[in-house]
Image (cartoon, rainbow, N blue to C red; front, side, top):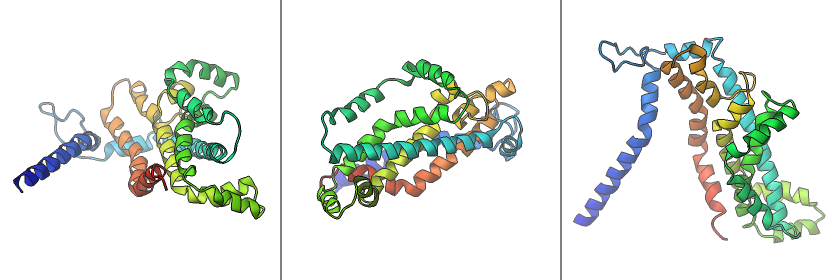
Length: 276
């Protein structure tokens, strides 16, 4: 009994420490964003709570935070949708059709995902310049789809491989085409996996920094991470209050998505790992 009590205390203590360790940066970010003086810890600097920072970054004509948010959401939605769609088609072909070398497709994509982004950014920049896509949505959507495809494909493979091929055979006997089978039978059954894939690619695209920095110039296509990083250049100093307020606003959509759909994301990631 005593050993069990000690074990419970250690578990609760560890969980509390981990929670505090993870939540502390966010709490500090909120405190700074709600204070008129980000250096309130200094001597003779008053601690004044205010929503001034939020009002100013949302109404300022030079910050363009709402434009950055719009760009991030639209680009991330497009990249997540097409990456999930292409991954679903590829996973169906690999798990259902017979053709030589199909086993090498996911392996090659997995190998491609191991290359660091910085190693290909120069070539991508030349390509985007050739297509005249610099500072457009296309300059970010296409790289995000490409970078997200390996993860999307492997998640969809794990789900579609668990679905019985007898479903396809029965549908083929009834006269359904392969695309009809995928759309009306396979995808509805693999919806948790497709949804978790969509969410993961969306979150990655929303948070990506390097490509957004290299391929965009101004608020017409620039995303939130780069927009916040540029605050220093806009104001000639580091406006910590603005930066923290913008960061709070930027993470709200991600926190809401994870909080609302956490169950489905976990379900989608774990279902494909269980045989049966």
